[in-house]
Image 1 (spheres, rainbow, N blue to C red):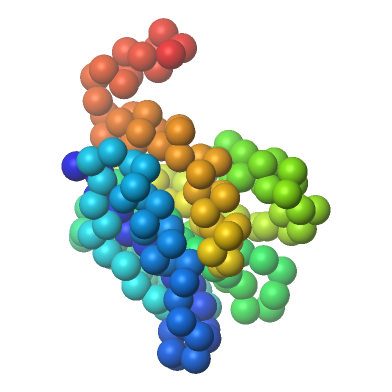
Image 2 (cartoon, rainbow, N blue to C red):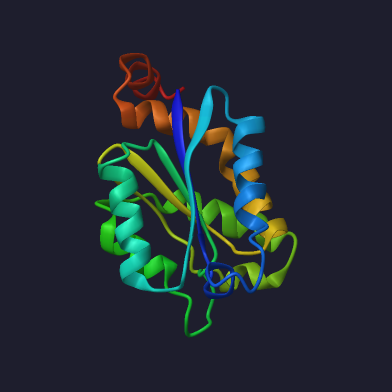
Amino acid sequence: MIRVGVLTVSDRSSRGVRPDTSGPAVAGAVLAGLADSQVIAAEIVPDEPAMIAGTLKRWADELDLDLILTNGGTGFARRDNTPEATRAVIEREAPGLAEAMRAAGLRQTPHAMLSRAVAGIRGHTLIVNLPGSPKAALENYQTIAPALPHALELLRGSADAEEHHKRGE
């Protein structure tokens, strides 16, 4: 079972001013495409670094999630704090995931280069920042989805995954 959390970062959605459409869209994509997955946690927090970081830590350390997908707060706006909050809690970066999302996004729009999204590892939890718009969040998720099962196996320390990795598979 792959245990997943979806964290929406949005001042307006956290206050109930705007409905959260990105979080449910991402959760639906995970359930539809990531075999044997379950969304254990879904929450909306404002663009406050301490709240973002606190939720990421709690979900990784206490809920023992395998994958946390954030959406929102990755752009240039003054209140976009998700990358900084993520960097504050991860132990190792996974830059290839963010690079792949930006590269794929550039085929759709030049604005993809404005993404400051990061990805990284805390313990055995993979944390990935997705954009806030439902369309962009889904496109970015679909870009990395093929690599997620193997990445999560490696993080869980699967002997088979380690052997495949050593052989370059």
